[in-house]
Picture 1 (cartoon, rainbow, N blue to C red):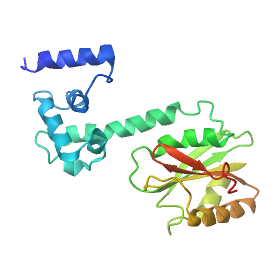
Picture 2 (tube, helix red, strand yellow; picture 1 turned 180 degrees about the vertical axis):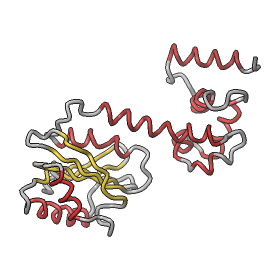
Picture 3 (tube, helix red, strand yellow; picture 1 turned 90 degrees about the horizontal axis):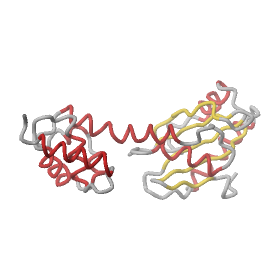
Length: 223
């Protein structure tokens, strides 16, 4: 039996009784690493990770190559650390808008926010809706902002047509942390709106996400 087994049992019991609310950041990492590192003092490793990267979110966002540079963190532990934000993201995506109806900017923004959790680069999503504003699909179309060369308006239109969408919601994120649409965002939005209108599809909204905030073009009279 490991000398750490009693400590691990107590920490697990504390989590099961109180959740993570009473845990410091190093305790969160410590208990997580139990499941990848069975025979080492994960408290020490947790402190090393926080010492190298800073706060908890920075540990989860760190590249896997840098995580494995920390003593005691092998590929299995690093993979588990990288897995957690993605599981959280999928959990949030699963919870939002359970009926799949996005008939207001508020619902649209709440639905899309989880798609950007943990994203370090700008990405573009297209949500296709039927006549009752029910989600037909949410497709990740491009990497890079809506103003980048990677954005192909034809692909946006073709995707909407392929799902027989009545309307769509365009969305992208700002990695600057500021959701305010840029002048270029506005120009691109009008181009997308007009291209969709030519095939009788409505651009219902364009949602710009930054961290846990979003701005709706529709709410702000920009459509």
